[in-house]
Length: 73
Image 1 (tube, rainbow, N blue to C red):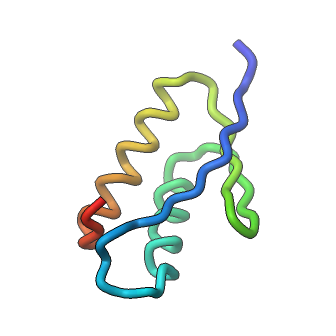
Image 2 (image 1 turned 120 degrees about the horizontal axis):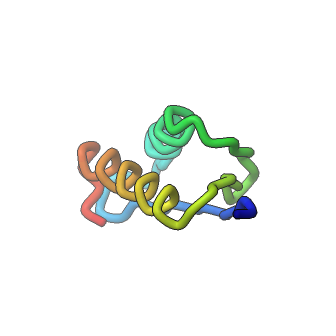
C-alpha cells in the first residue's frame, strides 16, 4: 500500500490561556514518539502514515495527551 501524507493542525480549546506553545510541544513529542516520519511547518505538521488505523492510533494518543494537559476539547 502506498504511504499517505497527512497535514495535521491541532488547536486545543478551553485551555484558559492564549499561549499554545506547551501544547504544540507536547503534540510534537507524541508524533516523534510514534516513530513516523514527519515535518513541521508554520501551521501544519505533515506526517507519513501507512494505514488509516495508524493515523487513528496517533490521533487518539494526541487527544489523550492534550486532555491530560487540561484541554477541554
